[in-house]
Image 1 (cartoon, one colour):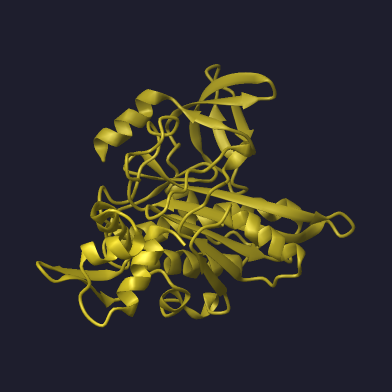
Image 2 (image 1 turned 180 degrees about the horizontal axis):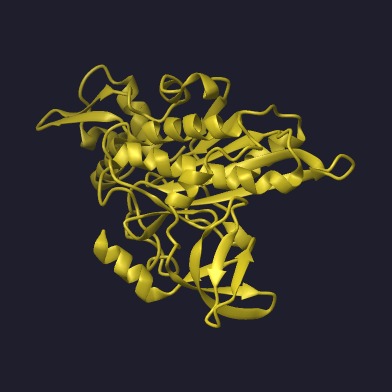
Length: 333
């Protein structure tokens, strides 16, 4: 149990205000450490008053990210999810993959306040500090063929983008194939990991992971991602924003998932394309190429026009945006 959890426990047990000095003494830490813990609890949605010469008092937990608070916002299509909110995990995807191997049922959801080994695409890590983001994975047991697995990722991208619109009142865009951008910066990464049944050609299970930055981490993003990463809110998120975002993502995703393999979301996916009209670099085999994105086809493949005028359908791999296009987008927003 870390200091933040211990401070919360003291506040929950107190019958009245409890001073920072009292908590610091009880926990063997400084008053500044207690103050930082209270700040993190407020960012997580706890309503805590501070009265001069009296101390802190916990007023409400109704906006806190808990299974019950999320469930109250779920619509029928997502109502059968089993939600587990944890303080810290290695990776929500790793936890759910272990549960899947043990026979876990479809619809299990693991949400963490912090990941110590968050996963990104191509073996990269995903920075997941406490208090700044929503880190969530869903266990799925799809009835469609393994080649349709890309549909899970693209559907999730639209679900996250729509949820961000609802929470912020502004429009999110999708960088093909699995990143969500807001005001020219990456605010969400999506990773789908699957186990294939080679006898049937179907999926034994798929684990869909989504990490969304609500606020910048204390001290800022690490240097390796600082030029790209962003957050939905510049400082504190509104009360209940994390809970609202989690429920909205689940509601939108399960609407699309229950209609698969039909891609009912593709028109919206295309309309939110960050890359359309942009100059990009991409790998074709071992060759790096440049081109301009024309759009996205019905199979969620990227349509690229090369400098010589020929066109390519690009179905998998890594795409990099030419810097001047991204800077222009940030200036416009």
